[in-house]
Length: 278
Image 1 (cartoon, one colour):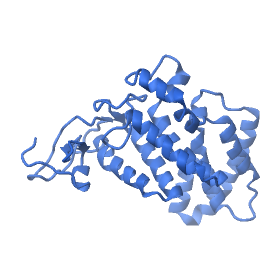
Image 2: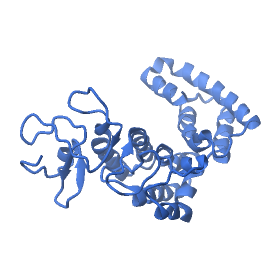
Image 3: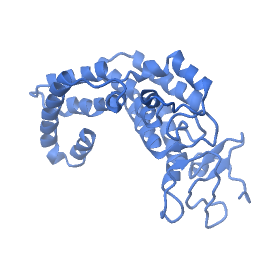
Image 4: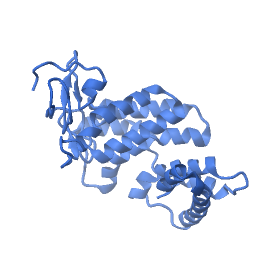
């Protein structure tokens, strides 16, 4: 809700002051509530609390100089003390060990453990260090952000630029697939990382995901259906003239090195679409 209001304020600047005032009051109320009712470890809120930093940072950027930001800063502190430390978890030997043990079946019977490898949670967690730099100014956040993303991709990365996650992480096999929620949350994190760090590698990966993974969920030629999961090895060409990819449910093309690429990225990224290939 806070994120949506931030976007609304940017879309309608004439209402920005009202949005800022409302968010300041909400932040104060939420800070008080969390002081009395801390987040339960292992709950959804515990896993996703880092997302709260984005609208809070927006609020510090747009609040008037006369505004009392102490509740906002206090609430930021609670995000760190009550929220999941995703970077430490992903960079820990336990994360790699769990993945190596059974990369195809990480959704175990314990709910808390499921959330620690839940694809959408992992996607949102990738922005944690970008926010951390905004809060602390510590340049080490840049290196930790890069290591966090690289670790996830090393164990679960796909040719589309995103990681496998039918529900939970499921290794590097090309038929694992990734649900749309994890795709868009990863794109948001990559955007946040580029905005804060200025490193174009994040922007390049965001573009790769947007052209390879995202279209599968929305384009099927007629827009009459959606494919919620996309797979790097599912091939469906839809084209109206030779060598022109018109729309895709999931489209794959081979690069000179045999890498599978999906959808419009086959053209956008300059990959070689072979004449006569089905």
